[in-house]
Image (cartoon, rainbow, N blue to C red; front, side, top):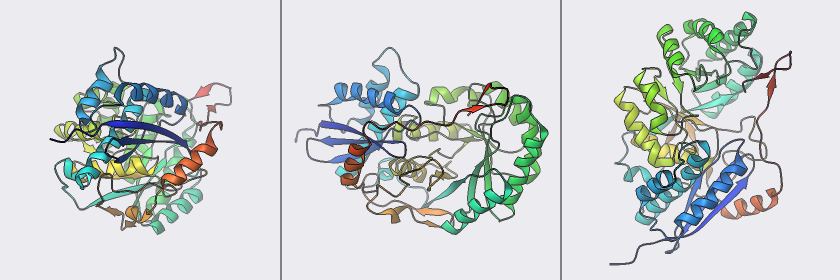
Length: 386
């Protein structure tokens, strides 16, 4: 029996616009790529990779589940966005390695695909109906049949009804183009306003409303879900099955949106697909980040019976300096036709990273300030949710 291929190298690359790529190499020369992007906390996650490197160099790269369990459970403190994002990057790279070793896409290792293509949606910005119509028109030309937009900008705990009317007009404008639209409240809207806004949007039949309240409020979100017929979606700021449990037991959500770069990688995303299916909850992975994360999501999407739609970042407002295709050798794998991407057929994640460009860009990016989100303040100077 041949000796196992062990992990011999784990490298981390911080590259623009705000991504962390992970490269894992094994003793038999196979290289796998992962993504552990955690927007706004880049430096902290980079430090977490130091601990993973120390712990897992020399381990059998085939033992994905064993590595996952040790990374998550062997320390007294566990979970949370930093650890889970670092673990996600490692886990995705290990699945990429295993698929390449066996010469099959990851979805084959997850039991095979249950669909031949994956439905996707794109994000649109804009603060006026004219702005969102312009953005939505571009997405439609790119092949999308569905988009997502922010529900509001900065908003107070209780604010002017005029702000809600602005949201309704923007959604109406996008729907007039024949596109389906999800509306992201982004946790910005507090309970008193969220109830009003959800009711105002109901006649427009959006695909979903996302993070209608902050993810610290499962009971209040459950209350809201009983007030309106619009599907409730959330999950980008939940990191494991344990975090999802209260939402599922309270019947608070209709669509789960775990982020493969935050929730524990392909391993945990696949488990979350099965877990949420038990509660008749659909899966729509969150992914406004890089190509490795998108490819990882698609591998699970193809094998998950309850999958409905995949977020896809395409040159959106915060992707300055690079877009979804910049670091790919062949971007045609993500070609959109009538709102769908065909199943990725290559081994592992099914994408090929331009390693030379990644290394060159990361070297030139050292010392530069990492990406930071905007900070909102009201007219009285008080902090508001981003």
